[in-house]
Length: 109
Image (tube, rainbow, N blue to C red; front, top):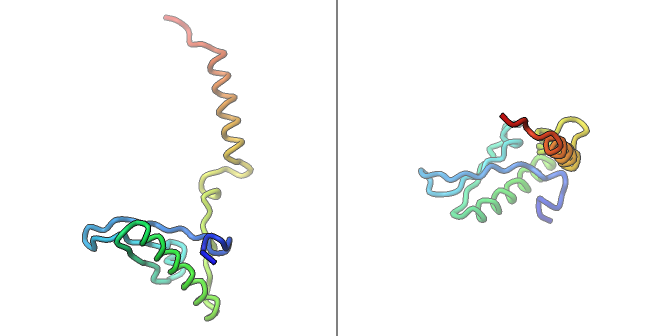
């Protein structure tokens, strides 16, 4: 099972290039927030992402085994949408606004 297959393990990964290390560095924000050392690295972006997934699985399994706190995965939706909003409702609002703008041309000067 990969981390993406398990809804409980859909954690954020920040992948950044490090000139100092000459590698991509992975940071796991939710795990760092609960005090875990949550960094990995890879020579390529893909390798860093794979190692990040492996680290998530390791941290999750270790926390379960040891009875440590398991952080809740962050959600894009919680940051991006207002309560009750969806990408579909935003698109519908945008289309409605575009029609309103088209039906009221700007006055000529």
